Picture 1 (cartoon, rainbow, N blue to C red):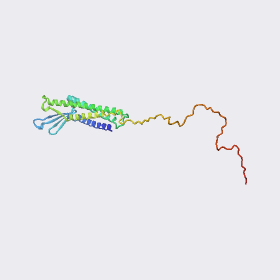
Picture 2 (cartoon, rainbow, N blue to C red):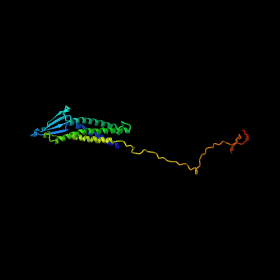
Picture 3 (tube, rainbow, N blue to C red):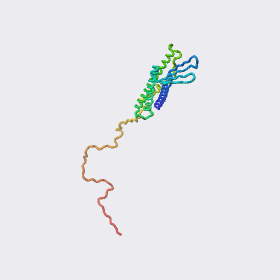
Picture 4 (tube, one colour):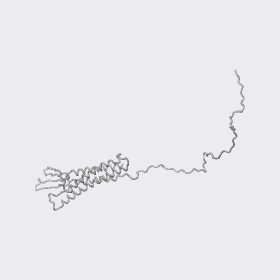
Length: 250
């Protein structure tokens, strides 16, 4: 029951990490740029994402445009688009494989095969966590360096968007789920020792106190003489001469 509980908990945590990774990939809030003019009415907020850019006016109107060309993105967002997609693929494969080797399923007959499949799924989830952690940290580092640079115009300074924080949470959940699955191995020895019937030792019988009940006949030949006649000595044997009694007829 302990191993089943660990695997189910790891699967739930991994699924939550995959959902957050998908949200991080789709939400266009990797980088946020705030522009405020002389009048607050002219202020606007620009969101940069992997697939689209959105501009929100101070009046509440929002306009989004798809990034049709990959070369128009910055280098960190270009790498992030590829790495996040690969992370989602590896994470999804690892999540599905974890059901094949789970203890509560009967897809595989041998316990060692189940353990190997679960370890592989855990390694894939850990790899997915690393793949999504790299672009998120890279984009965050570039946003912080541009914000602190004196060469950047005040109205063009970039801030860390919500997708970066979602990506960090996703990486942590995928890493925890993968580690739990990778360490969910069957014990090398059974929890309970195998039952062995008690062995009783029997000693040799005491021949001095107890003699054999039955003694086998000896192999020596019979040395007696045979006369050819044998008369059993019985007390109820019939007499040698029998006298007939007279019968009386009426």
